[in-house]
Image 1: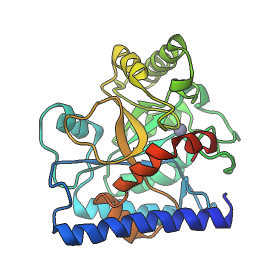
Image 2 (image 1 turned 90 degrees about the vertical axis):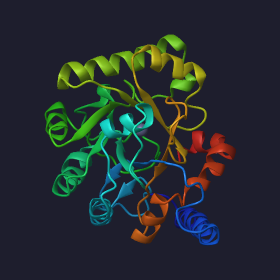
Image 3 (image 1 turned 45 degrees about the vertical axis):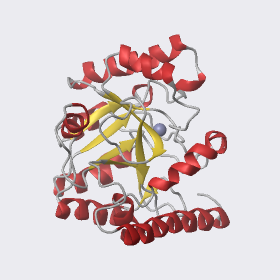
Length: 290
Ligand SMILES: [Zn+2]
C-alpha cells in the first residue's frame, strides 16, 4: 500500500499520459502514431483486493481485461511472439502478450482460472530459489506490499498445462546489473536449468528483476545470450517491434485501481510515452522499487 497522495499523483499522471496520447492519435488519424507492426507485452505481478497497491490487480478488473483481449482476438502466446519478432512472421494487428512476474500464489489461485476460461495464453516469470516459500514478503518491486506465498512446483506444473509458458526471473530476484558477471551468469544458468529439469519445458525467455535501467546492460545481454535465452524483458515502457535488441525488450505495466478505458488505451500505446519516466527517473525507480 502506498500513501493516498502518492497513489493519486501516480494515477493522475498515468491517466494524463494516456489521454494525451489519445488526443495525439485523434490528430494523426486512426491506426496509431507509428503504423508499424508492433506488439505490446503487458506486465502483471499479483492479484487480489489490496487497497492502493499498484502491483496488485483485482480479479474483477483482471477478468474484464482478459475478456476484452479474448473478444478482440489479439492475445498471442510466447511462441507466436518469438516467431513474429525473431522469425519474420508479421504479428497480427494490435497483438498483445500477457506476462506475470514473480511467481506469486495468486497467479495460480486468481489469474489461472480466468486465463483458462478465456483461453488467453500468458508467460509466468518465476524465481526458482523462492518457489514454494510461504508467508514471504514479496521480493518484488514493491517495498511495502502485503506478504504472499509463492507457487510451488506442483502448481507450476498445472499452469504450464494451461498454455502458460514459464520463463526465468533469475535465481534469487536480485539485480543482474548490480552484481559481478560470474554471479549474473550463475543466476541465469541455474534458474533456467532448474525450471527445465522440474517442468520438462524449454525456457527461452527471461525477465530482469526490477527491470529499471540500472538492472540490465550490454553485459547482462551477452550473458543471457551465452546462456541460450532467446529474449529478455525489462520494465521499460514501449512497444516491441521487429529489429529491437532481443535482450532489452520493453513492456507496459498494468496497475491496480485503473479503469478498463485506461487498459484499452495502453493496448494502443497510450502509456508508451511513460518511457520518458523510465529514462529520466530510473535512479528513483531503482531505490524506490516502483
Ligand atoms: Zn520481479
